[in-house]
Image (tube, rainbow, N blue to C red; front, side, top):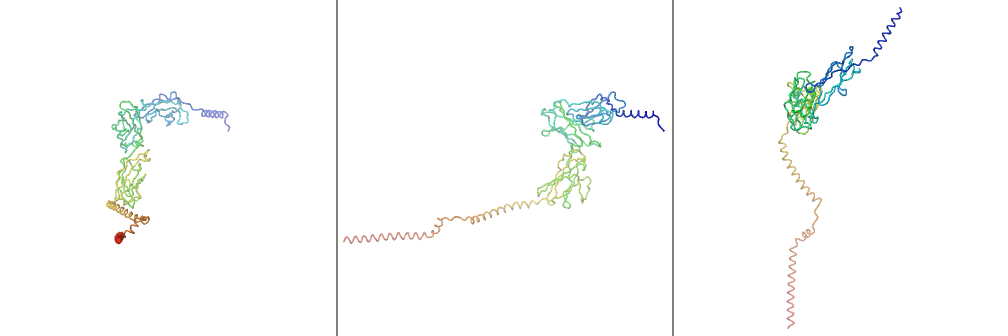
Length: 424
């Protein structure tokens, strides 16, 4: 059966109208109104605004917002936005309205609202403001004075977190060298989301001469445990086993460990890093509940060994894994060498060395004579050769003198007799 011509025309008209509607660009909404900013607590910045005027009744309004340099983009139906941010620099938020959750849609003209840092000389504000959560029980904050501050400035630290009803002042101000610090109690709440929150901190002086300085400390970072406790040391099958206890307020799976072993005989030490404390095939009688165990191979059992442990948070439970605890107290195991042996050796060794030196000197002297014999002295040799004939030589000298005297006397007698004969 053939359809009426008019029905075909109506169908074509509806198709064209639908196509034109899809091709038409979406309507841009007016900008939001009455954008304002305020600060709650210490570092909670809140922006609020009203819906745009003369918005399309067919539009389900969504609000597109971001901070400076298009950071932290967000599309939401709420007419407010908040952020925890240190108020040390200027912070701006831009907001626009649109009819969908698609970021590619053209939002309205963006409206911007900024909050400026506190008044005052930036060089007077404290520097290096840092906070550490010690053993999940107290927080310690330290800082350095600003450049343009008086040495006698009295500082005050204020803090706030989600479990407090109001801002509190830290009372325990102290000085450590050039640093100034303050500590306050901060225990882990039973709230399961407590670790996801932050602590807001502000430091300023009592008279308002310096510019306030702010910091936000996430509770998932900057956590430093107390040192663990060593309960027992023992050898089994030639290996050393260390039994300890994790610091209070922590579970073992959220910590990384280091075990340091020092040997007194070899004067060597090594550090063993452990991510998960466990001891396989351990034959130990006793209750191991709440105990951490470490297996340390290669330790000499017949010598004195000292052991200590330290821990840090790991990234399984925390964002920060840089802060090690202090070392635990040292515990020793093994036998210490008998000091009597060392005393005897200290007495015997010098005697042995002295005897060896004397023997060596004597041997060297004889060896020197053999290798380098002395050169003979001719005068000495002549004296030795004729020294025994001195008495005979003297006798012969006396004999010659006597003989000479006798001859002279004989000659005199003969001369006298000849003279007498001549005179007769």
